[in-house]
Image 1 (tube, rainbow, N blue to C red):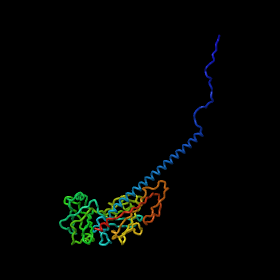
Image 2: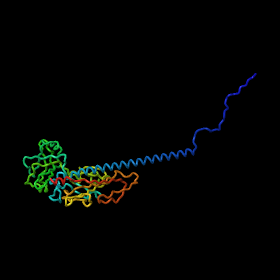
Image 3: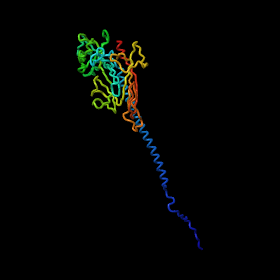
Image 4: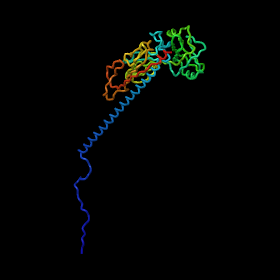
Amino acid sequence: MRTTFASSSPSKTILPRGHGRGGFTLIELMFALVIGLFVVAALYNLFTAQVRQFVYQDLQMEMHQNTRLATDMMSRTARLAGYGTNGTTAGAFGYEGVDSSSLPAIISSNGTGPNGSDAITLVSMDPSLVVNTSSTFPPSCASTTLTVDTAALHNAARLAQYHEGELLMCYDYAAIGGFRSFLWPMTADANVTSGELSIGSGSAYADYDISCPVADNLPLVMTCSRAEVVTFYIDNDDSDGIGAGSADHPVLMMDLDFESPDADDVPLVDNVEDIQFAYCLASGSGLTDCSDPAAWVDEIDPDAASDVYMIRISLVVRSSREDLRHLHVGQRPELEGNPASATTDHYFRQVLSTEVAVRNMRIQSLL
């Protein structure tokens, strides 16, 4: 007997050629490419927007720091204006056109700088280096030496910071007939052993001779310190070889020798485009309301420095470079009556004003 078994092998199905293989059609690829381009474009726009915002914030921070630094430097110096004087001091840098031709503690220069910017000179003594002279006999007004007691507390250490070429200011707080202040150039470093200060003869200055005649004497005791005669101005001229400023990058400068701008002037802050100073003056009654705009003037007479109650410092600082896309359009704005620029550009700008009380001259006038 013959037994037949059925085959258990599965039947084989033959599929059409190409069916079941992975892939995209041309239309699908085009859709994917378009979507990818949109995503890349969106990411690129987001990136460039963030870069522009970062640059803008960086420029704003730079301007903010420059504004704070410039304001801080000028306001600190203005607060000290007149310390050691009674509005004027006789001797070095005797100022022409003033009573006795003495050097005022505040000298205003209205609109004499680039773009109509102002300048200011502030005179004071350094309060951290104050010493008292001590003499057995009153030195003559023509004396070229003064003596300080080096045994007194801190005097020797302070004298070590008095150097040739700097200025020495002394005031006579017990003068009969009024306060007297004197200014000499130092002709040598202070002698910290003997306490001797070498100074130029005051008789070389007409205003000094009026305040301290040759036949007269200086007092036995005077309060003295290293003097500071500081001028702030803007330099935007790179053709004269003096200063760090240019038309593209105006620089706030500090002059320490009361001369015309020269090579030893100190650059302080870059991109200061305009500074303006206003002065609140004492009224005839002695009562001053600096909240009244009528109390403020743009310029003061040199012999009216002791009438200054407050100084308002206003400045314009611009960015170090222009807007990258030139979308921002601006101009130097009007400031304290100085007209705005007639031309536009693509710089960003910040404006800041601060008011500083000038107390020292009023205090000294009471001594």
